Length: 168
Length: 419
Ligand code: FES
Ligand SMILES: [Fe+2]
Image 1 (cartoon, rainbow over the protein chains, first blue to last red):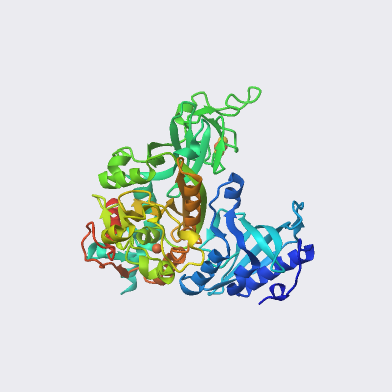
Image 2 (cartoon, rainbow over the protein chains, first blue to last red):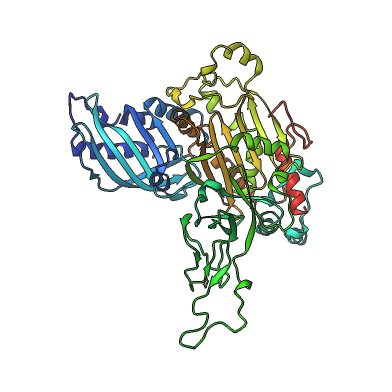
Protein backbone atom coordinates (compact mmCIF):
# COMPACT_ATOMS: atom_id res chain seq x y z
CA UNK A 1 0.00 0.00 0.00
CA UNK A 2 1.13 3.52 -0.69
CA UNK A 3 2.41 5.46 2.26
CA UNK A 4 -0.19 8.21 1.85
CA UNK A 5 -2.88 5.65 2.59
CA UNK A 6 -0.78 3.73 5.05
CA UNK A 7 -0.34 6.32 7.79
CA UNK A 8 -2.80 5.72 10.53
CA UNK A 9 -4.12 8.89 12.09
CA UNK A 10 -6.98 10.26 14.07
CA UNK A 11 -7.13 13.38 11.93
CA UNK A 12 -10.43 15.24 11.75
CA UNK A 13 -11.49 18.32 9.75
CA UNK A 14 -10.17 19.30 6.38
CA UNK A 15 -6.95 17.95 4.86
CA UNK A 16 -4.01 20.30 4.54
CA UNK A 17 -2.81 21.51 1.14
CA UNK A 18 0.27 19.35 1.48
CA UNK A 19 -1.87 16.30 2.06
CA UNK A 20 -3.91 17.07 -1.05
CA UNK A 21 -0.83 17.47 -3.21
CA UNK A 22 0.64 14.27 -1.79
CA UNK A 23 -2.60 12.41 -2.48
CA UNK A 24 -2.71 13.60 -6.10
CA UNK A 25 0.91 12.53 -6.63
CA UNK A 26 0.50 9.18 -4.88
CA UNK A 27 -2.61 8.38 -6.93
CA UNK A 28 -0.81 9.07 -10.21
CA UNK A 29 2.29 7.10 -9.22
CA UNK A 30 0.30 4.11 -8.03
CA UNK A 31 -1.58 3.99 -11.36
CA UNK A 32 1.72 4.39 -13.24
CA UNK A 33 3.12 1.53 -11.15
CA UNK A 34 0.08 -0.59 -12.12
CA UNK A 35 -1.07 -0.94 -8.51
CA UNK A 36 -4.67 -0.89 -9.69
CA UNK A 37 -5.73 -3.13 -6.81
CA UNK A 38 -5.37 -0.18 -4.41
CA UNK A 39 -6.89 2.40 -6.77
CA UNK A 40 -10.34 2.42 -5.06
CA UNK A 41 -8.69 3.19 -1.68
CA UNK A 42 -7.84 6.68 -2.88
CA UNK A 43 -11.57 7.45 -2.74
CA UNK A 44 -14.18 7.75 -0.01
CA UNK A 45 -16.68 4.92 -0.01
CA UNK A 46 -19.40 6.99 -1.74
CA UNK A 47 -17.07 9.00 -4.01
CA UNK A 48 -17.76 10.00 -7.59
CA UNK A 49 -15.10 9.25 -10.22
CA UNK A 50 -16.10 10.66 -13.55
CA UNK A 51 -14.09 10.80 -16.77
CA UNK A 52 -15.57 13.06 -19.40
CA UNK A 53 -14.63 15.36 -22.25
CA UNK A 54 -14.40 19.11 -22.26
CA UNK A 55 -17.25 19.20 -24.76
CA UNK A 56 -19.62 17.23 -22.51
CA UNK A 57 -18.50 19.10 -19.43
CA UNK A 58 -19.14 22.51 -20.98
CA UNK A 59 -22.52 21.38 -22.35
CA UNK A 60 -23.46 20.03 -18.90
CA UNK A 61 -24.14 16.54 -20.30
CA UNK A 62 -24.07 13.68 -17.79
CA UNK A 63 -22.50 10.93 -19.90
CA UNK A 64 -18.80 11.05 -20.53
CA UNK A 65 -16.52 8.03 -20.76
CA UNK A 66 -16.49 6.52 -17.24
CA UNK A 67 -18.71 7.10 -14.22
CA UNK A 68 -18.21 5.28 -10.94
CA UNK A 69 -20.38 6.07 -7.96
CA UNK A 70 -18.92 4.51 -4.84
CA UNK A 71 -15.89 2.28 -4.39
CA UNK A 72 -17.95 -0.83 -5.26
CA UNK A 73 -18.15 0.27 -8.87
CA UNK A 74 -14.45 1.08 -8.81
CA UNK A 75 -13.70 -2.40 -7.43
CA UNK A 76 -15.69 -3.87 -10.33
CA UNK A 77 -13.61 -1.92 -12.84
CA UNK A 78 -10.45 -3.22 -11.17
CA UNK A 79 -11.72 -6.79 -11.22
CA UNK A 80 -12.77 -6.43 -14.86
CA UNK A 81 -9.29 -5.12 -15.66
CA UNK A 82 -7.61 -8.14 -14.09
CA UNK A 83 -10.02 -10.86 -15.13
CA UNK A 84 -12.47 -9.90 -17.88
CA UNK A 85 -11.18 -7.19 -20.20
CA UNK A 86 -8.86 -7.90 -23.11
CA UNK A 87 -6.46 -5.29 -24.50
CA UNK A 88 -2.90 -4.81 -25.60
CA UNK A 89 -0.83 -4.38 -22.41
CA UNK A 90 0.25 -0.80 -21.77
CA UNK A 91 1.36 1.53 -19.01
CA UNK A 92 0.90 5.21 -18.18
CA UNK A 93 3.25 7.91 -17.10
CA UNK A 94 1.49 10.91 -15.54
CA UNK A 95 2.88 14.42 -15.50
CA UNK A 96 0.86 16.66 -13.22
CA UNK A 97 1.03 20.43 -13.04
CA UNK A 98 1.01 22.48 -9.88
CA UNK A 99 -2.36 22.30 -8.19
CA UNK A 100 -4.48 25.41 -7.89
CA UNK A 101 -6.56 25.46 -4.75
CA UNK A 102 -10.09 26.66 -5.24
CA UNK A 103 -12.06 28.70 -2.76
CA UNK A 104 -12.99 26.59 0.22
CA UNK A 105 -16.76 26.26 0.54
CA UNK A 106 -16.79 23.91 3.52
CA UNK A 107 -14.70 23.27 6.62
CA UNK A 108 -14.23 19.66 5.67
CA UNK A 109 -13.43 19.79 1.92
CA UNK A 110 -10.48 21.08 -0.07
CA UNK A 111 -10.99 21.57 -3.79
CA UNK A 112 -8.17 21.73 -6.30
CA UNK A 113 -7.64 21.79 -10.02
CA UNK A 114 -4.54 20.16 -11.51
CA UNK A 115 -3.65 19.81 -15.19
CA UNK A 116 -2.22 16.52 -16.36
CA UNK A 117 -0.70 14.79 -19.35
CA UNK A 118 -0.45 11.03 -19.67
CA UNK A 119 2.00 9.29 -21.95
CA UNK A 120 0.95 5.74 -22.80
CA UNK A 121 3.52 3.08 -23.68
CA UNK A 122 2.25 0.05 -25.59
CA UNK A 123 3.56 -3.51 -25.66
CA UNK A 124 5.15 -2.74 -29.05
CA UNK A 125 7.18 0.10 -27.52
CA UNK A 126 5.04 2.74 -29.19
CA UNK A 127 4.62 5.83 -26.99
CA UNK A 128 1.87 8.38 -27.41
CA UNK A 129 0.56 11.42 -25.66
CA UNK A 130 -2.59 9.58 -24.66
CA UNK A 131 -4.53 12.03 -22.56
CA UNK A 132 -4.39 15.72 -21.76
CA UNK A 133 -6.77 17.37 -19.36
CA UNK A 134 -7.48 18.47 -15.83
CA UNK A 135 -8.46 16.93 -12.55
CA UNK A 136 -11.15 18.69 -10.55
CA UNK A 137 -10.81 17.22 -7.09
CA UNK A 138 -12.61 17.42 -3.78
CA UNK A 139 -10.58 15.93 -0.97
CA UNK A 140 -11.76 15.10 2.54
CA UNK A 141 -10.51 13.10 5.48
CA UNK A 142 -12.16 9.70 5.79
CA UNK A 143 -10.97 7.08 8.28
CA UNK A 144 -8.15 9.43 9.23
CA UNK A 145 -6.82 9.59 5.65
CA UNK A 146 -7.10 12.18 2.88
CA UNK A 147 -9.22 10.74 0.07
CA UNK A 148 -11.03 11.96 -3.00
CA UNK A 149 -14.70 12.52 -2.40
CA UNK A 150 -15.00 13.57 -6.00
CA UNK A 151 -12.57 13.32 -8.90
CA UNK A 152 -13.74 14.64 -12.26
CA UNK A 153 -11.28 13.99 -15.06
CA UNK A 154 -11.90 16.32 -17.98
CA UNK A 155 -10.22 15.30 -21.21
CA UNK A 156 -9.40 18.11 -23.60
CA UNK A 157 -10.16 15.99 -26.65
CA UNK A 158 -13.44 14.33 -27.56
CA UNK A 159 -11.36 11.53 -29.03
CA UNK A 160 -9.88 8.60 -27.12
CA UNK A 161 -7.17 6.57 -28.81
CA UNK A 162 -8.16 2.87 -28.93
CA UNK A 163 -9.70 2.44 -25.45
CA UNK A 164 -9.46 3.30 -21.76
CA UNK A 165 -9.10 0.40 -19.34
CA UNK A 166 -6.56 1.78 -16.85
CA UNK A 167 -8.06 4.59 -14.77
CA UNK A 168 -6.76 8.07 -15.59
CA UNK B 1 3.54 -16.55 -57.48
CA UNK B 2 5.62 -14.73 -60.08
CA UNK B 3 6.29 -11.01 -59.62
CA UNK B 4 4.39 -10.13 -62.82
CA UNK B 5 1.25 -11.86 -61.65
CA UNK B 6 1.51 -10.10 -58.32
CA UNK B 7 1.93 -6.71 -59.95
CA UNK B 8 -1.14 -7.33 -62.10
CA UNK B 9 -3.21 -8.31 -59.08
CA UNK B 10 -2.40 -5.10 -57.30
CA UNK B 11 -4.85 -3.21 -59.50
CA UNK B 12 -8.14 -2.70 -57.72
CA UNK B 13 -9.92 -2.82 -61.06
CA UNK B 14 -8.71 -6.38 -61.55
CA UNK B 15 -9.65 -7.45 -58.10
CA UNK B 16 -11.52 -10.77 -58.11
CA UNK B 17 -13.52 -12.08 -55.20
CA UNK B 18 -12.64 -15.67 -54.22
CA UNK B 19 -14.93 -18.33 -55.74
CA UNK B 20 -16.30 -19.25 -52.27
CA UNK B 21 -18.21 -15.96 -52.33
CA UNK B 22 -19.19 -14.14 -49.15
CA UNK B 23 -17.80 -16.86 -46.88
CA UNK B 24 -14.42 -15.31 -47.67
CA UNK B 25 -13.25 -11.71 -47.31
CA UNK B 26 -9.85 -11.08 -48.91
CA UNK B 27 -7.48 -9.19 -46.60
CA UNK B 28 -6.69 -6.79 -49.46
CA UNK B 29 -10.04 -5.13 -48.75
CA UNK B 30 -8.66 -3.75 -45.50
CA UNK B 31 -5.40 -2.32 -46.79
CA UNK B 32 -5.65 -1.44 -50.48
CA UNK B 33 -5.69 2.36 -50.99
CA UNK B 34 -7.25 2.00 -54.44
CA UNK B 35 -10.17 -0.02 -53.13
CA UNK B 36 -10.52 2.58 -50.38
CA UNK B 37 -10.77 5.31 -53.03
CA UNK B 38 -13.32 3.29 -55.01
CA UNK B 39 -15.43 2.92 -51.86
CA UNK B 40 -15.56 6.71 -51.50
CA UNK B 41 -17.07 6.91 -54.95
CA UNK B 42 -19.25 3.80 -55.09
CA UNK B 43 -20.45 3.60 -51.49
CA UNK B 44 -20.24 6.97 -49.75
CA UNK B 45 -20.90 9.09 -52.84
CA UNK B 46 -22.97 6.29 -54.39
CA UNK B 47 -26.44 4.88 -53.83
CA UNK B 48 -26.48 4.87 -50.05
CA UNK B 49 -28.13 6.94 -47.35
CA UNK B 50 -25.50 8.20 -44.90
CA UNK B 51 -26.17 9.19 -41.30
CA UNK B 52 -25.35 12.90 -40.94
CA UNK B 53 -26.54 14.00 -37.50
CA UNK B 54 -29.59 14.18 -35.29
CA UNK B 55 -32.44 16.52 -35.89
CA UNK B 56 -32.08 17.96 -32.36
CA UNK B 57 -28.48 18.99 -33.06
CA UNK B 58 -29.72 21.65 -35.49
CA UNK B 59 -32.93 22.69 -33.82
CA UNK B 60 -32.89 26.41 -34.57
CA UNK B 61 -32.79 28.46 -37.73
CA UNK B 62 -29.15 29.13 -38.58
CA UNK B 63 -27.80 26.10 -36.73
CA UNK B 64 -25.16 24.11 -38.54
CA UNK B 65 -23.41 20.84 -37.77
CA UNK B 66 -20.40 19.53 -39.67
CA UNK B 67 -19.68 15.87 -40.37
CA UNK B 68 -18.21 13.66 -43.07
CA UNK B 69 -19.72 11.33 -45.64
CA UNK B 70 -16.92 8.90 -46.21
CA UNK B 71 -14.04 11.37 -46.26
CA UNK B 72 -16.05 14.16 -47.87
CA UNK B 73 -16.64 17.07 -45.46
CA UNK B 74 -20.32 17.92 -45.19
CA UNK B 75 -22.28 20.61 -43.39
CA UNK B 76 -25.93 20.25 -42.37
CA UNK B 77 -27.97 23.41 -41.79
CA UNK B 78 -31.45 24.53 -40.86
CA UNK B 79 -32.74 27.56 -42.77
CA UNK B 80 -35.17 30.25 -41.63
CA UNK B 81 -38.15 28.21 -42.82
CA UNK B 82 -37.05 25.27 -40.70
CA UNK B 83 -35.93 23.30 -43.75
CA UNK B 84 -32.84 21.12 -43.47
CA UNK B 85 -30.05 21.25 -46.04
CA UNK B 86 -26.77 19.41 -46.45
CA UNK B 87 -23.90 20.52 -48.64
CA UNK B 88 -20.31 19.57 -49.26
CA UNK B 89 -18.40 21.78 -46.83
CA UNK B 90 -16.06 23.10 -49.49
CA UNK B 91 -15.99 26.62 -50.86
CA UNK B 92 -16.91 26.92 -54.54
CA UNK B 93 -14.01 29.35 -54.98
CA UNK B 94 -10.83 27.48 -54.12
CA UNK B 95 -12.11 24.66 -52.01
CA UNK B 96 -11.44 25.76 -48.43
CA UNK B 97 -13.63 24.38 -45.66
CA UNK B 98 -16.46 26.85 -45.13
CA UNK B 99 -17.66 25.77 -41.67
CA UNK B 100 -14.91 25.04 -39.19
CA UNK B 101 -16.71 24.24 -35.94
CA UNK B 102 -18.59 21.11 -35.01
CA UNK B 103 -21.71 23.20 -34.35
CA UNK B 104 -22.60 26.85 -34.57
CA UNK B 105 -25.44 29.24 -35.18
CA UNK B 106 -24.92 31.70 -38.05
CA UNK B 107 -26.86 34.07 -40.28
CA UNK B 108 -25.16 32.79 -43.41
CA UNK B 109 -22.18 30.61 -44.27
CA UNK B 110 -19.02 32.56 -44.87
CA UNK B 111 -15.70 31.31 -46.19
CA UNK B 112 -12.81 32.88 -44.29
CA UNK B 113 -10.34 32.75 -47.19
CA UNK B 114 -11.80 35.34 -49.62
CA UNK B 115 -15.11 35.99 -47.86
CA UNK B 116 -17.47 34.31 -50.31
CA UNK B 117 -20.80 34.17 -48.59
CA UNK B 118 -23.52 31.54 -48.94
CA UNK B 119 -27.15 31.27 -47.91
CA UNK B 120 -28.04 28.58 -45.37
CA UNK B 121 -29.14 26.40 -48.29
CA UNK B 122 -25.73 26.73 -49.96
CA UNK B 123 -26.58 29.29 -52.66
CA UNK B 124 -23.82 31.80 -53.29
CA UNK B 125 -25.03 35.25 -52.33
CA UNK B 126 -21.97 37.41 -52.07
CA UNK B 127 -18.50 37.56 -53.61
CA UNK B 128 -16.07 40.05 -52.11
CA UNK B 129 -14.83 42.69 -54.57
CA UNK B 130 -17.07 41.23 -57.27
CA UNK B 131 -17.14 44.62 -59.01
CA UNK B 132 -13.52 45.32 -58.24
CA UNK B 133 -12.00 47.99 -56.04
CA UNK B 134 -12.23 51.59 -57.28
CA UNK B 135 -13.10 50.36 -60.75
CA UNK B 136 -10.17 47.98 -60.96
CA UNK B 137 -10.26 44.18 -60.96
CA UNK B 138 -13.45 42.30 -60.18
CA UNK B 139 -15.05 39.22 -61.66
CA UNK B 140 -15.60 38.95 -65.41
CA UNK B 141 -18.87 40.38 -66.82
CA UNK B 142 -20.36 36.96 -67.34
CA UNK B 143 -19.72 35.73 -63.78
CA UNK B 144 -22.90 33.96 -62.71
CA UNK B 145 -23.29 33.31 -58.95
CA UNK B 146 -25.96 30.69 -59.71
CA UNK B 147 -23.22 28.52 -61.19
CA UNK B 148 -21.18 28.55 -57.99
CA UNK B 149 -23.02 27.15 -55.04
CA UNK B 150 -22.05 24.64 -52.35
CA UNK B 151 -22.69 21.19 -53.76
CA UNK B 152 -25.95 19.92 -52.25
CA UNK B 153 -26.79 16.45 -50.95
CA UNK B 154 -30.31 15.14 -50.81
CA UNK B 155 -31.48 14.94 -47.21
CA UNK B 156 -34.21 13.10 -45.42
CA UNK B 157 -35.09 12.87 -41.78
CA UNK B 158 -36.18 9.56 -40.27
CA UNK B 159 -36.95 9.04 -36.57
CA UNK B 160 -34.95 12.10 -35.57
CA UNK B 161 -31.92 11.12 -37.64
CA UNK B 162 -30.88 13.11 -40.69
CA UNK B 163 -29.57 11.10 -43.61
CA UNK B 164 -27.91 12.43 -46.75
CA UNK B 165 -27.09 11.02 -50.14
CA UNK B 166 -25.14 12.05 -53.22
CA UNK B 167 -27.24 9.75 -55.40
CA UNK B 168 -29.76 11.32 -57.77
CA UNK B 169 -31.81 8.21 -58.00
CA UNK B 170 -32.40 6.42 -54.76
CA UNK B 171 -35.47 5.24 -52.87
CA UNK B 172 -36.54 7.07 -49.71
CA UNK B 173 -34.84 6.22 -46.40
CA UNK B 174 -37.64 4.01 -45.15
CA UNK B 175 -37.58 1.89 -48.32
CA UNK B 176 -33.76 1.82 -48.15
CA UNK B 177 -34.04 0.34 -44.65
CA UNK B 178 -36.84 -2.08 -45.49
CA UNK B 179 -39.95 -2.69 -43.35
CA UNK B 180 -38.41 -4.80 -40.56
CA UNK B 181 -35.42 -2.50 -40.01
CA UNK B 182 -37.58 0.62 -40.18
CA UNK B 183 -40.06 -0.66 -37.65
CA UNK B 184 -37.38 -1.53 -35.09
CA UNK B 185 -35.83 1.91 -35.51
CA UNK B 186 -39.26 3.40 -34.84
CA UNK B 187 -39.44 1.29 -31.67
CA UNK B 188 -36.11 2.72 -30.49
CA UNK B 189 -36.01 6.27 -31.79
CA UNK B 190 -39.58 7.09 -32.70
CA UNK B 191 -40.13 9.73 -30.01
CA UNK B 192 -38.47 13.02 -29.00
CA UNK B 193 -34.83 12.36 -28.17
CA UNK B 194 -32.35 13.94 -25.80
CA UNK B 195 -28.56 13.74 -26.09
CA UNK B 196 -26.96 12.59 -22.82
CA UNK B 197 -23.33 12.74 -23.94
CA UNK B 198 -20.93 12.02 -26.79
CA UNK B 199 -17.33 11.02 -27.37
CA UNK B 200 -15.30 9.35 -30.06
CA UNK B 201 -12.63 6.73 -30.31
CA UNK B 202 -9.86 6.36 -32.87
CA UNK B 203 -9.58 2.72 -33.85
CA UNK B 204 -6.63 1.68 -35.96
CA UNK B 205 -8.35 -0.43 -38.54
CA UNK B 206 -10.20 -0.24 -41.83
CA UNK B 207 -13.83 0.88 -41.40
CA UNK B 208 -15.14 -2.43 -42.77
CA UNK B 209 -13.58 -4.40 -39.92
CA UNK B 210 -15.79 -2.46 -37.55
CA UNK B 211 -18.78 -2.97 -39.87
CA UNK B 212 -18.06 -6.72 -39.68
CA UNK B 213 -17.48 -6.62 -35.93
CA UNK B 214 -20.92 -5.07 -35.32
CA UNK B 215 -22.52 -7.86 -37.34
CA UNK B 216 -20.40 -10.57 -35.73
CA UNK B 217 -22.70 -12.06 -33.10
CA UNK B 218 -20.37 -15.07 -32.83
CA UNK B 219 -17.77 -13.19 -30.76
CA UNK B 220 -20.13 -11.58 -28.26
CA UNK B 221 -19.74 -14.01 -25.36
CA UNK B 222 -16.25 -15.18 -26.36
CA UNK B 223 -14.32 -11.92 -26.55
CA UNK B 224 -16.48 -9.99 -24.11
CA UNK B 225 -16.47 -11.83 -20.79
CA UNK B 226 -17.69 -9.14 -18.42
CA UNK B 227 -21.13 -10.68 -17.97
CA UNK B 228 -19.77 -14.16 -17.32
CA UNK B 229 -16.98 -12.94 -15.03
CA UNK B 230 -19.49 -11.12 -12.86
CA UNK B 231 -22.01 -13.95 -13.08
CA UNK B 232 -24.65 -11.62 -14.39
CA UNK B 233 -27.81 -13.66 -14.50
CA UNK B 234 -28.87 -12.54 -17.93
CA UNK B 235 -31.86 -14.78 -18.56
CA UNK B 236 -31.80 -13.43 -22.05
CA UNK B 237 -29.82 -15.92 -24.06
CA UNK B 238 -32.66 -16.42 -26.46
CA UNK B 239 -32.22 -14.29 -29.55
CA UNK B 240 -31.50 -14.10 -33.22
CA UNK B 241 -30.45 -12.17 -36.28
CA UNK B 242 -32.70 -10.47 -38.79
CA UNK B 243 -31.27 -9.36 -42.11
CA UNK B 244 -32.90 -6.69 -44.26
CA UNK B 245 -34.17 -7.88 -47.64
CA UNK B 246 -31.03 -6.79 -49.45
CA UNK B 247 -28.88 -8.05 -46.50
CA UNK B 248 -27.16 -4.67 -46.13
CA UNK B 249 -28.53 -3.94 -42.68
CA UNK B 250 -29.09 -6.23 -39.75
CA UNK B 251 -30.66 -6.50 -36.34
CA UNK B 252 -29.21 -8.72 -33.64
CA UNK B 253 -31.34 -9.13 -30.54
CA UNK B 254 -31.45 -10.97 -27.25
CA UNK B 255 -34.69 -11.61 -25.53
CA UNK B 256 -35.50 -12.72 -22.03
CA UNK B 257 -36.35 -16.41 -22.16
CA UNK B 258 -40.12 -16.85 -22.00
CA UNK B 259 -40.30 -19.65 -19.42
CA UNK B 260 -38.06 -17.82 -16.98
CA UNK B 261 -40.13 -14.76 -17.45
CA UNK B 262 -43.31 -16.54 -16.48
CA UNK B 263 -41.78 -18.34 -13.50
CA UNK B 264 -39.65 -15.62 -11.99
CA UNK B 265 -40.96 -12.29 -13.04
CA UNK B 266 -44.71 -12.55 -13.10
CA UNK B 267 -45.19 -11.25 -9.58
CA UNK B 268 -42.24 -8.91 -9.22
CA UNK B 269 -42.79 -6.87 -12.38
CA UNK B 270 -41.22 -3.73 -10.93
CA UNK B 271 -37.79 -5.25 -10.51
CA UNK B 272 -38.10 -7.56 -13.44
CA UNK B 273 -35.17 -6.09 -15.30
CA UNK B 274 -32.74 -6.02 -12.39
CA UNK B 275 -29.93 -8.44 -12.74
CA UNK B 276 -28.44 -10.68 -10.15
CA UNK B 277 -24.69 -10.51 -10.24
CA UNK B 278 -21.44 -10.68 -8.35
CA UNK B 279 -20.89 -6.95 -8.79
CA UNK B 280 -19.68 -4.85 -5.85
CA UNK B 281 -21.51 -1.93 -7.39
CA UNK B 282 -24.79 -3.44 -8.57
CA UNK B 283 -26.10 0.05 -9.38
CA UNK B 284 -24.41 -0.43 -12.73
CA UNK B 285 -27.12 -2.81 -13.90
CA UNK B 286 -30.16 -1.14 -12.40
CA UNK B 287 -32.64 -1.21 -15.23
CA UNK B 288 -36.30 -1.12 -16.06
CA UNK B 289 -38.30 -2.99 -18.61
CA UNK B 290 -38.85 -0.45 -21.32
CA UNK B 291 -40.68 -2.42 -24.00
CA UNK B 292 -43.07 -5.30 -23.73
CA UNK B 293 -41.54 -7.36 -26.56
CA UNK B 294 -39.03 -8.84 -24.10
CA UNK B 295 -36.01 -7.68 -26.12
CA UNK B 296 -33.30 -6.56 -23.68
CA UNK B 297 -30.24 -6.13 -25.93
CA UNK B 298 -30.12 -5.11 -29.55
CA UNK B 299 -27.59 -3.95 -32.11
CA UNK B 300 -28.90 -2.73 -35.40
CA UNK B 301 -26.68 -1.71 -38.31
CA UNK B 302 -27.53 0.57 -41.20
CA UNK B 303 -25.27 0.23 -44.22
CA UNK B 304 -22.71 1.62 -44.68
CA UNK B 305 -21.46 3.00 -41.39
CA UNK B 306 -23.87 3.41 -38.50
CA UNK B 307 -25.51 1.36 -35.81
CA UNK B 308 -28.11 1.80 -33.09
CA UNK B 309 -27.51 0.02 -29.79
CA UNK B 310 -30.02 -0.63 -27.07
CA UNK B 311 -28.24 -2.43 -24.22
CA UNK B 312 -30.70 -2.74 -21.32
CA UNK B 313 -31.75 0.94 -21.20
CA UNK B 314 -28.58 2.32 -22.77
CA UNK B 315 -29.56 3.78 -26.12
CA UNK B 316 -26.80 5.04 -28.39
CA UNK B 317 -26.00 5.73 -31.99
CA UNK B 318 -22.58 4.66 -33.17
CA UNK B 319 -21.26 6.23 -36.33
CA UNK B 320 -17.91 5.12 -37.70
CA UNK B 321 -16.19 7.44 -40.15
CA UNK B 322 -13.33 6.25 -42.35
CA UNK B 323 -10.19 8.34 -41.71
CA UNK B 324 -7.84 6.66 -44.16
CA UNK B 325 -7.52 3.03 -45.19
CA UNK B 326 -6.44 1.88 -41.71
CA UNK B 327 -8.04 4.45 -39.37
CA UNK B 328 -11.64 4.84 -38.29
CA UNK B 329 -13.20 7.35 -35.93
CA UNK B 330 -16.00 5.77 -33.96
CA UNK B 331 -18.53 8.25 -32.55
CA UNK B 332 -20.79 7.44 -29.60
CA UNK B 333 -23.96 9.48 -29.21
CA UNK B 334 -25.75 8.49 -25.99
CA UNK B 335 -29.46 9.18 -26.02
CA UNK B 336 -32.49 9.25 -23.81
CA UNK B 337 -36.03 10.38 -24.43
CA UNK B 338 -37.45 13.75 -23.60
CA UNK B 339 -40.12 11.99 -21.56
CA UNK B 340 -37.59 10.18 -19.30
CA UNK B 341 -37.92 10.69 -15.56
CA UNK B 342 -34.80 11.65 -13.58
CA UNK B 343 -34.60 8.11 -12.30
CA UNK B 344 -34.71 6.69 -15.82
CA UNK B 345 -32.09 9.18 -17.01
CA UNK B 346 -29.75 8.23 -14.22
CA UNK B 347 -30.12 4.52 -15.05
CA UNK B 348 -29.20 5.29 -18.66
CA UNK B 349 -26.24 7.30 -17.39
CA UNK B 350 -24.96 4.45 -15.18
CA UNK B 351 -25.45 1.87 -17.93
CA UNK B 352 -23.35 3.97 -20.31
CA UNK B 353 -20.41 2.39 -18.45
CA UNK B 354 -21.14 -0.83 -20.33
CA UNK B 355 -20.18 0.51 -23.78
CA UNK B 356 -18.07 3.25 -25.34
CA UNK B 357 -14.31 3.81 -25.24
CA UNK B 358 -14.11 2.46 -21.67
CA UNK B 359 -17.11 0.13 -21.87
CA UNK B 360 -16.91 -2.67 -19.32
CA UNK B 361 -18.72 -5.07 -21.63
CA UNK B 362 -17.31 -4.11 -24.99
CA UNK B 363 -14.10 -2.07 -24.74
CA UNK B 364 -12.31 -4.97 -26.46
CA UNK B 365 -13.84 -3.85 -29.76
CA UNK B 366 -11.53 -0.83 -29.60
CA UNK B 367 -8.48 -3.04 -30.10
CA UNK B 368 -9.71 -6.31 -31.64
CA UNK B 369 -10.14 -4.89 -35.13
CA UNK B 370 -6.66 -3.40 -34.95
CA UNK B 371 -5.37 -6.88 -34.09
CA UNK B 372 -6.97 -8.13 -37.33
CA UNK B 373 -5.55 -5.17 -39.26
CA UNK B 374 -2.06 -5.89 -37.93
CA UNK B 375 -2.45 -9.62 -38.41
CA UNK B 376 -3.53 -9.43 -42.02
CA UNK B 377 -1.73 -6.55 -43.65
CA UNK B 378 1.25 -8.56 -44.86
CA UNK B 379 -0.93 -10.99 -46.85
CA UNK B 380 -3.48 -9.16 -48.99
CA UNK B 381 -4.19 -12.24 -51.08
CA UNK B 382 -5.33 -14.40 -48.20
CA UNK B 383 -8.86 -14.30 -46.88
CA UNK B 384 -10.83 -14.64 -43.70
CA UNK B 385 -13.08 -17.70 -43.24
CA UNK B 386 -16.73 -16.91 -42.51
CA UNK B 387 -18.76 -20.12 -42.31
CA UNK B 388 -20.11 -20.09 -38.76
CA UNK B 389 -23.81 -20.87 -38.98
CA UNK B 390 -23.42 -22.17 -42.54
CA UNK B 391 -22.80 -20.52 -45.88
CA UNK B 392 -26.22 -18.98 -46.30
CA UNK B 393 -27.04 -15.31 -46.09
CA UNK B 394 -30.38 -15.49 -44.35
CA UNK B 395 -31.99 -14.33 -41.13
CA UNK B 396 -31.45 -16.70 -38.20
CA UNK B 397 -34.27 -16.20 -35.73
CA UNK B 398 -33.15 -18.67 -33.07
CA UNK B 399 -29.41 -18.35 -32.65
CA UNK B 400 -26.68 -15.78 -32.56
CA UNK B 401 -23.86 -18.31 -32.96
CA UNK B 402 -23.67 -17.37 -36.60
CA UNK B 403 -21.80 -15.13 -39.00
CA UNK B 404 -24.76 -14.69 -41.29
CA UNK B 405 -24.89 -10.90 -40.84
CA UNK B 406 -21.18 -10.64 -41.68
CA UNK B 407 -21.88 -12.54 -44.89
CA UNK B 408 -24.81 -10.18 -45.41
CA UNK B 409 -22.47 -7.18 -45.20
CA UNK B 410 -20.18 -8.65 -47.83
CA UNK B 411 -23.16 -9.53 -49.97
CA UNK B 412 -24.23 -5.88 -49.97
CA UNK B 413 -20.66 -4.67 -50.35
CA UNK B 414 -19.98 -6.82 -53.40
CA UNK B 415 -23.17 -5.65 -54.99
CA UNK B 416 -22.52 -1.94 -54.58
CA UNK B 417 -18.79 -2.18 -55.35
CA UNK B 418 -19.34 -4.39 -58.41
CA UNK B 419 -16.83 -6.95 -57.04
S1 FES C 1 -11.65 29.70 -50.94
FE1 FES C 1 -13.51 30.35 -50.11
S2 FES C 1 -13.57 32.39 -50.68
FE2 FES C 1 -11.78 31.71 -51.62
FE1 LIG D 1 -17.89 -6.71 -29.74
